[in-house]
Length: 326
Image 1 (cartoon, one colour):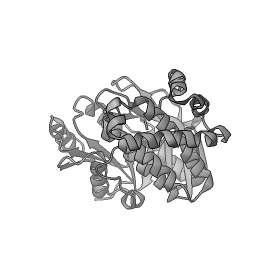
Image 2 (cartoon, rainbow, N blue to C red; image 1 turned 45 degrees about the vertical axis):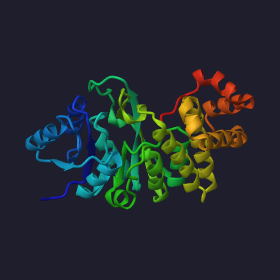
Image 3 (cartoon, rainbow, N blue to C red; image 1 turned 90 degrees about the vertical axis):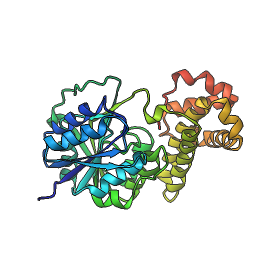
């Protein structure tokens, strides 16, 4: 059996309402040289049966059934099963434009980049209705990995999501997602850039990210906040060898922490007093850096100015701040 060029990895867990839309969007790709790996992460609903039915109907769909281990573990299991030269990750409650794979492949082939990235579009509807996009009008641009990562961290394109990226399989194998951690993309994606030389951006929103109740990012408990804080700090440490991207990483961390501090409940502040105080310290310590950084986002600059008056000042401008989800 000839190996496919691309392996699409879709972790599946309690998404029977959304899975069909996701799978159909992948089957309808204009680029056909791919396999779809559905990783049933011990889903307790009808998802395992649905996965099996897709595999029976389509010869390029394969299923991995495993015990529940979380999103990172499911993605890693999919990578181990993958046979493609490249891999891409699609979450099972999201969907992709018909041109998704074609343009990712074109981005790599046109510029000889290590990997390619498309833009994301946040949606609130579950129905699959892709935008009308003419592929000849899509801008494709190559960057050094350092510049590309800086653009991502300054929130000018894509964000830190692992979705919407076409990676060499060997890179996904050598940089696995951390099991047992939420905010796994924030902990992992920047490492793909640091391991590369050139990245291509495809300037079209070809990945549709569904914001829904019950998703991981909406399940905001104390563990999630701790992981979010830790991942934000690890990002800055991981980028410290290059001054350009470290400054961008500080901008991203500041964005995350000023969002976190407005979301924390009283229980967290009491139970994790040390961590809470450290968040406040970092925000105050980095505010001068943000104000002096010409590339910092206007939301971060507003927050940095507001912190002159402490948390009351930050709360006062919170309604006009762009609320990050990662």
